[in-house]
Image 1 (cartoon, rainbow, N blue to C red):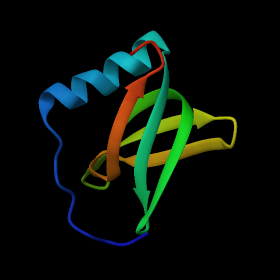
Image 2 (image 1 turned 135 degrees about the vertical axis):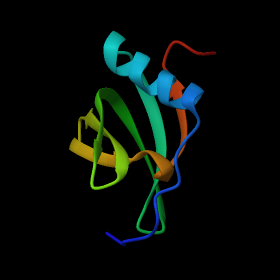
Image 3 (image 1 turned 90 degrees about the horizontal axis):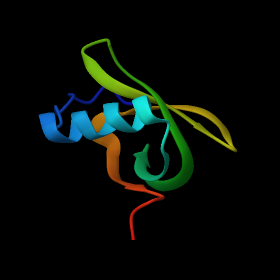
Image 4 (image 1 turned 90 degrees about the vertical axis):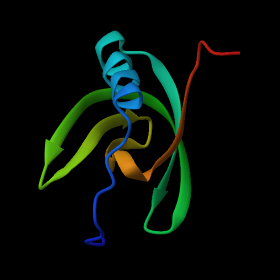
Length: 81
């Protein structure tokens, strides 16, 4: 993983991620992984800070992922139209 500078996300978006973790909502998340766009369905298990950056711990059928918040492109709840 590259050592690029962390760009904080908005407080509103951070709150959305925390709510998804708290309510165990099924979501579809699109994110950048080393320059390649990935899309996964699963649940946000935790939002946390480490090494000066914020991350989510994400559980999907493909396994557990740790995704930096500034690498998330979009998140859509399965309950959204």
